[in-house]
Length: 68
Image (cartoon, rainbow, N blue to C red; front, side):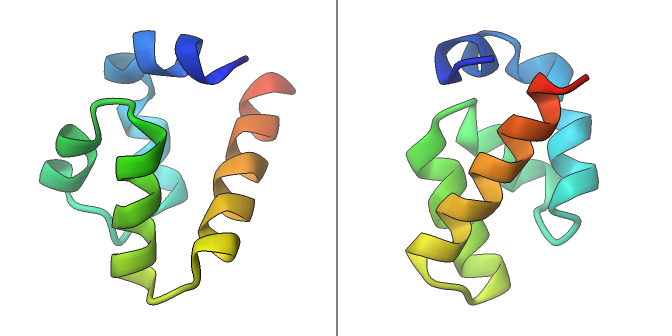
């Protein structure tokens, strides 16, 4: 699944995002609206991690989605 698909299916993926990053609030997830860079920033802020680590986590999440 590429990011355009994720963005288009964001409403149905929001629960999955919440499961993966439990510290993100509903507002955080809603604000992201499927935008990778916004989600990246939210993850960095909530988890206090570097951009590279947040990118790695997003990539792993996408890989997990693709394996389903």
